[in-house]
Image (cartoon, rainbow, N blue to C red; front, side, top):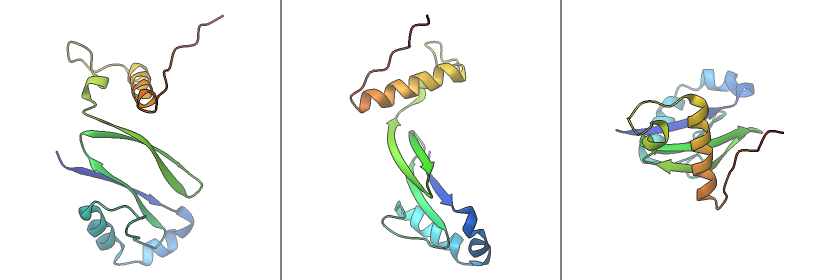
Length: 115
């Protein structure tokens, strides 16, 4: 597998993005070097927020014209599949991802008992 690059575009700057004939080249160059906008700005209302291996699942929080990385999970396929290698329902996958990231941050998550 290769790498994935996440790019944040600011919609209020779409007029600049539409006119910028070099933006694609700057994004491709920064992404191929594995740099984020903190390392290498691409300009015109576009920010590279994450470059990661395709085998890595990354949790990003987007808002306030920016993006924060809240953790990643390498070799995540075990989270999405059961013991018989069947894909799990989305609700179960969501729980497993949240638990895994919480554990990496030193927390444990439990399901609240219904009253």
